[in-house]
Amino acid sequence: MLLSNDSVIYKCDTRDLSKICATSMSRVTHQQYVNLSWKMRDGSLKGLFCTAPKSIRSVRRNSGSFNVSAFTEEQEALVVKSWNAMKKNYGELALKFFLRIFEIAPSAKKLFTFLKDSDIPVEQNPKLKPHATTVFVMTCESAVQLRKAGKVTVRESNLKDLGATHFKYGVVDEHFEVTKYALLETIKEAVPEMWSPEMKNAWAEAYDQLAAAIKTEMKPPS
Image (cartoon, rainbow, N blue to C red):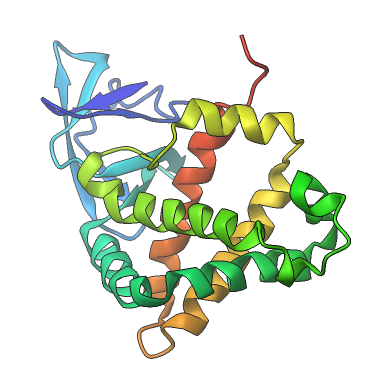
């Protein structure tokens, strides 16, 4: 389903929205208790759009209410604040990020051609840091731009290519989860004085939206 304002289109999970028109509900509750306003165009479910748009990931019914998974203005502020603090050291943080991934899941090294056939210790491989930096910066900048763009965006690439690459090398859901954990731990260690449950949730939501967008494009080349 498409939820939209005049300029931004959002894709949403509609499995639990079948009764929204029949019950004439005009408000949906965000998962963090932020109310979003909705308007029906011509009384049609297809024409439903959000009048207080955010980067909406999914809408699910829960005990008579509708829970919206979205990236809020408050979450955006937390992500921007922490990313600004990390920028000066992003190269070293990126390397820590990837080394944490391999610490948790050593088998993940097999996904990288420049690692699986190399006898050089992982941390000394000259190709690791540049690759890690590209991924780390892409992930963080995607989070920073998420709400303003109204959708997942990635620098120096596109989601279709990312999806195809992840599909080609056999990336699975477990790899995304390991990467998410490693990312959150890396950020936590980088900005300990800022870290909070709210900041953790902000980065987790932004990452989940990026991962979901990549998974959508994980299919064989056409």
